Image (cartoon, rainbow, N blue to C red; front, side):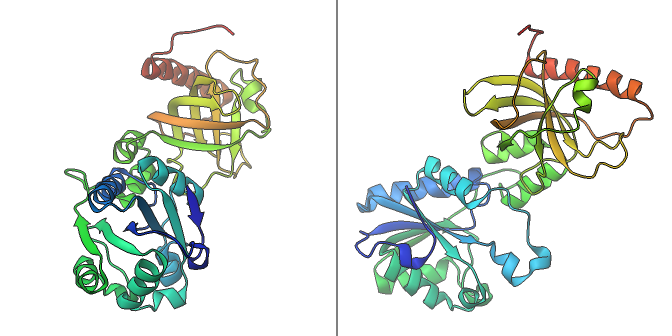
Length: 317
């Protein structure tokens, strides 16, 4: 799969394509439904290539930055997820004020016709585009009748709540990783390289693998979660009690971190190792304790609850 980061990077000899368009943040089940339909249309029309058109930054970050959402995924993560869903290539349009000013017809001609040679376009039924969002599925269909492509709007999955990136963000903000995973069609995960922390967990008998400065829409609300930690170098996976937050019991800490205690393991050296942390279920919110004894007692309860949720009996290294 290729990622084109401008119209100029699209090959001049690109054959006819089926195009799907959207922000695709999170690539949730609704997005996956649209991509599946695009794949079906490609087979029906004999156009072997499906191209997803997305935008960076999010259009709201340009048009109304104060209302711009925290992104659930990076461009690279989005492209990888779209590839898994059935997309062949991704065109990332660098969104700016100039592109925001394009009429729907300019958008269609420059992107769909001139750059991507679209034989069909498949989008969500609520898709809007062009200056002041004046274009919709009907606009695409009318233009396609003149320019040689078909257009189709797909109702997004979900019920009673329609799957959307906003819904996923709402779930994560509430710590509802189960609801977010249901909408995404996969567990909530974060990745990063483990860094050395203050080692308080080690002193308390709960050494943790720390991922620092993980702010944004892809990280759940502060609290303690049951989940898994996977080493990306060896693919080993361990049950873990995961803390998200700033450790309010200890004064002076302000950096938000994801800290994973691998159950029963005090021998792991993970500094510098790339890991993936998967959130399964929230155990509790973040609490400021009056003393270390109460904190340790609660952490022991967190471990017990984590075992129950993950069905992970005690083990020895």
